[in-house]
Amino acid sequence: MVTAVIGSQWGDEGKGKIIDYLSLNSHYVVRFHGGNNAGHTVVNSYGKFGMHLIPSGIFNKKTKAIISNGVVLDLETLLLEIETLEKAGISVKNRLFISPRCHLIMPYHKLLDRLYEEAKGKQKTGTTGRGIGPVHADKVSYNGIRVSDLMDKKSFSERLKIQLLIKNKILAALGEKPLLEKEITDLFFKFREKIKSFVSEPYSVLQKAIKAKKQILLEGAHGVFLDNDWGTYPFVSASTVLTGGATSGAGIPAKKIDRVVGVVKAYTTRVGEGPFPTELFNKDGELLRKEGNEFGTTTGRPRRCGWFDAELIRFAANINGFTELAITKLDILDAFPKLKICTHYVLNGRRMNYFDGDANFLSRVQPVYKIVVGWQQSTKGITNYKNLPKEARAYIKEIEKLVGVRVSYISTGEKRDAIIKISH
Image (cartoon, rainbow, N blue to C red; front, side, top):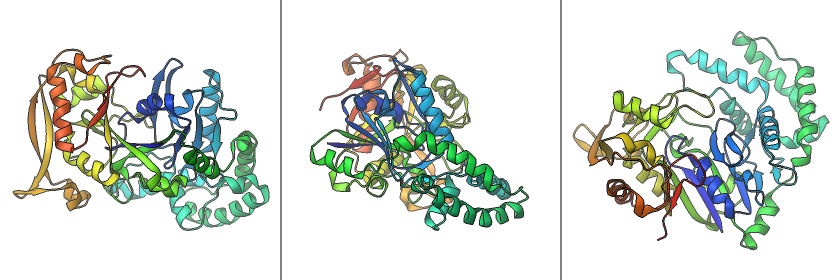
């Protein structure tokens, strides 16, 4: 069975925990898009980890972790993650597989990312500065350097030489010093020695696993509304975040995906620039940030916080084909006497849908709220649905009703076992 786990908001939904939990019964966990601009927090018996590239399922010793061709790699970050895992007693030897088709984030990508943002001034996109946009731009303009090139020293040197002829001219035009070929070559050849044992095309492995009906978990890296096509463009990521991205990003046919679990926070958060209809600028927003420790895993930036937006999640559910929802951070709402759920938007007196316009449109819509009663008692660590306060159960039911998708998992804390599984 193939299960896809997809973030349903602007990222930071708690995918890492849900994937860590589901990986206990998985043979393979696959990252199929994005790069180290993603950050998945995992808390288990080994400790607390911020995962950026290696699939969160690596903590299950029986699971093999695959970084497939749709992922762009910062090798320094990857090697640091491997080192961190090994120090924690988690071996990745013969368990981590990296597609040679992955594109490499080069030093000039990070520089260009920063310089482009500076040049935009007040119109900046709010990127993570990790070089993600520039490396994808090189990928689609036939200027990319892949892991397979690094495995062939001659190919790498030839491609790097050409790229520096191009990139140094751009860097100079933007006031930056040119990069030196030898320094980059020496650095990446050191990286090469450390990663070459993990490089192996996973396509046939996954195809055989599908035929053998093995449990495969697809790990979404970002939230739906950061998708390059269907997100709040241009305040998005560079890759395809949707379920269908697994076909191009991992070679898995869409019809082979059996379950699609949409991970959604019990409220809404966003990092960086872009529209956010339910954003709160009052004490409720501050309380959400404080109680939820809402600071980015990747950037450390404070997250913008707001009420649950059912209009967004309905769209995410429909376009991805969610079969079920996983609600995270329910316990963060314990302190609120009243809660609000955005049921839909209006603009100039008319009901509007998310897909009716662009980012500028979304910044002008007005959310329409339904007020529900809070429970004001601790739900932290509850593992049985019946033990939730009746008001919390009513909140979950209201989400199911508005989104049109059943809830199968409810997270009630950071730890792996702080979760409710609902049997339908």
